Image (cartoon, rainbow over all chains, first blue to last red; front, side, top):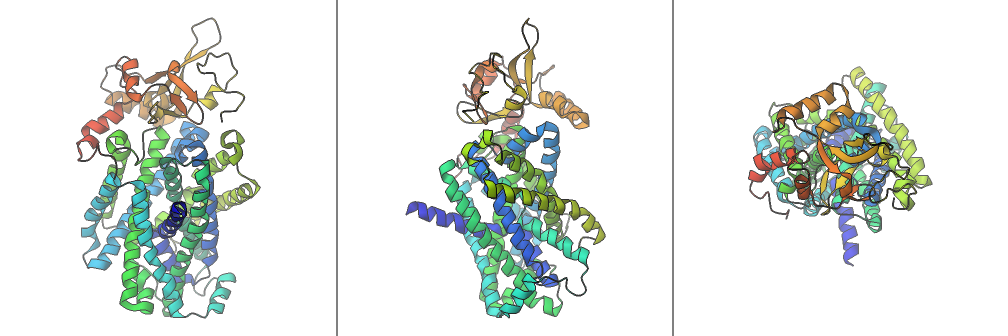
Length: 409
Length: 149
């Protein structure tokens, strides 16, 4: 019974923890401009993150090694270092976007300008990373993030023509007034939002921290195969909301408030209250994950002590990294750079950096000497290779498309 | 894994065919308490004897990693380390091969990490940055020595 509860809790937190500022913003922006014609990308992205997370979770459970430990071991110090720099840069960008997201969400709640909230939000975040246990952190924010289910309720309340909606989603056409390059640019952005690399660093490092063994793999797989797709449906609900309310009125989403607007239209004050709780929980949870992911990546690369299962004094360099990244994020946000813009760039650069960490994990998961009986089966390997191809194409196309479309304008 | 044919004997005597670059380099080193110590940044090889070259120690730290990284970044890494090191003529961190208890996906030591400094005649090479971060920043923040709640 206790085990079943544990599995349930894991799945619920995976659902609530799936959505972050990148998913919130990108899905709403895409919904308001392209309707549901890019919904298929969310499906492709969710299957991709399942494949990637399952592989790296399995590798973590069998070998007890984190992602960047393996990246360095397989690529050597030189290529490994370039890989580390690129991945950490993208994760830091995401971290900045998440802290900005917390501040924007709290601005919606309180009416206080977000720039005044940034330092306090960052301090609260740092305190959590300093003191709170891994599991407690994951569960609290994951469960509170479930408030975002309100977007699914809003879709149902708005009473769309389901048949037409499904037709638009399954027969995608580029809407009038949008060019093909912009369509594909946002396809890559959505893909990057669903498959952000930090999720995988966090997931596999968490597996090492909680000392997963082979027998824990079933639980980890349940989290991945049920939690992530259900989290993905929340992304689709956010997109559909924007498609139903914003697109017909020609309003383009440019603020976090507009992301929640359809919920207010459908469900009034109660709805918007739930949406705001969901925003704060989703961004706070993701900020914890990205902050830790920066520390995990660098510490694993250099072999330093890392993790939240020891006191900070025993992992000083790891905690120093987290402290410095938090200060850096505050400094960047206080330049008054628009957090929504930072988010939009972070999801595209995520897509660019993905193959860097995906490839070494795919190689290790296929190494029978390393993995023993838990080596990639035929299905995992086929999907793994297909996704490596998709990731590479998306990564190569991202920057040219960004230049051609002036970042989606 | 533990059943691989080219598994190293407890004290690597060099008599078994063994791809040291593949099996030792860039692996995580874990002490007898399960704490992460460092990564194997380079290997110390003894070529003085009459026999074949022998690996005698694991090397770690920027001085060992820099040359292997190469280029501008590698040189910069070593120069920064040299400038910041408290010693006049700093050496890379060194872990004698005798201290290795087991090798699987990581390298397990037979001693806890605090013994390493004593064994290396007071050389702080392995722990310098960690000790600095602890004494200057992290150790001074309230709650640094509490386990997470």
